[in-house]
Length: 481
Ligand SMILES: Nc1ncnc2c1ncn2[C@@H]1O[C@H](COP(=O)(O)OP(=O)(O)O[C@H]2O[C@H](CO)[C@@H](O)[C@H](O)[C@H]2O)[C@@H](O)[C@H]1O
Image (cartoon, rainbow, N blue to C red; front, side):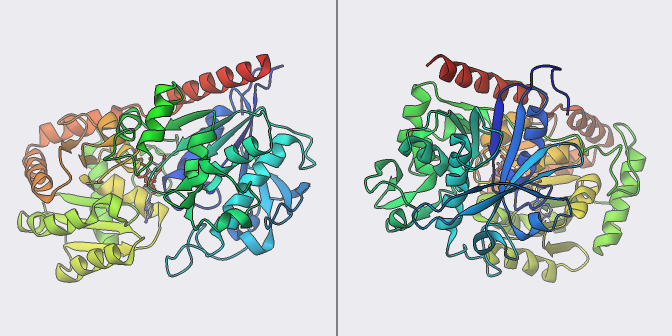
C-alpha cells in the first residue's frame, strides 16, 4: 500500500458486514474489498468486519489486539487483527455465539434473516463506537468512521448517544434494506429509552438512525442520490433524505470496479483477450456454451448474473425469454436469492433445455466466464443504486441491456456502451431485445460497441479522491471544533 512517506493520513475505520476477501453476498462485498485499498493510498485505513466462520477460517493468522465490554444485551467481544497479503489491516469482531456460524452473513439456510440480527449488527456498530472512543484496548484510534448500509449504520447513533465527537460517514448501498426490527429491540440493544431517530412507523430502523445521525451521507451514484429524495424511490425515508441533501450532507459518488476485472489477465478464463481480439473473445463464448451445456448456435448469448430478488427484475426476463429463444438466442442465468425467483429461472431452463440454463448458487469464476463469453447482459433492475455487474460486463465486452435507473444511467451510454430502456416493464425490455438482435446481426456495429464498452474507465481513482475530500473536510472541521 502506497502512502506519503511521513504522513499516514487520516485514520479511517471502514466498517462493513461483508468483504470479498472473506465473504460476499452481493455488491457491498466487492466495494468493501476495493475501496479501502484505494483509500489506503491516502489514509491509514483499517476495515472492521464481524468474525464470521469464513473470516476465522480464512487462513490468515489473526492476533488478538483488544476487547470490548458488554452493553445491555450486547455481549463482550474480542477484537482480532489480521493483515491481507497486500498489507491491508482488518479488525475482526469476535463473538462465537453471534458470528461463528455457517452460511450467509444475513440469512439462514432457508433464506430467512437470522433471528438475532438485531443483536448481531448492533454489536458490530457498538464495537465500532467503542474503538472510536479508545475503549477497545487498541493502540490505534480512528479519526473517522466510514459506515456501510444498515448493518453498521447504528454506529452513528452510538456515537451520538455516548456524546462522542468522532465524525461518521454512511454510505447507502441499497436503501431498500433498512434493518427493521420490532420496537422491543430497543431494550435489547442498550439504547436510550427515547430514541426518535430510530422510529420507523412504530418499529425501529437501524438505517434510519444512521441517516439521521451520520455527519455525511453518500450513495453510490449521483442519479440514485437524486432519486432517493423522491417518494417513488425513497422507501419511506425520502423526506429525511431530502432534508439531509438540502443541508448539503448527501451526495452520490459512483462505485468503481477493481483492477482484478481485466479480461486480458484473468485466471478464470482459458483464453484471455483485449479490445479488438474478437476471435479470442469468441473462444470464450464457445467454451461457456460447452461448460453450461448449451447448444452451439449462431445467435446471441444473453446472460443474467445477479442476486435473484425482486429488485433485479428476473420476472421481466422470465416474460421475455420465449422471444429470445424464438429469435435464435440463448440465455444463461446464475444467481441465488428468493425461492420464487430461483424457481422462475429453473422453470425456464427445464422448458428450454440446451437453450436456457440456470445455475442456482454463487460462483465467482463462472461469473467471470459469463461476462467474457456472453454477448449481452440483462439487467432490468427496478431500481439500482449503482450496479457493478454492468461495469464488469462492459469491461469484458458484454453489452448491458438495462433499465434506465440509478447508477445504470450513469454508467451506460445508450447505443454506445450498452442499451437502456425507460420503464421497467416487459414491453420496454422486448423492444430493447429487438435492438440487441439487430446490433448482433451487424458485426461492425457490434464490435464498435464492444470496444466502446471495454474502453469505459470505471476505475476507483476519481471516486476515491471524492471520498478523500469528504474525509478531510469532516476531520478538519472536527479538529477545529
Ligand atoms: N450467483 C452469483 N455468482 C457470482 N457472482 C454473483 C452472483 N450473484 C451476484 N454476483 C455478483 O455480485 C455482485 C452484485 O453486485 P451489484 O452491485 O450488481 O448488486 P447488489 O444488489 O448486490 O449490490 C448493492 O450494492 C452495490 C455496491 O454499492 C450497488 O452497486 C448495487 O446497486 C446495490 O444494489 C456483482 O459482482 C455480481 O457479478
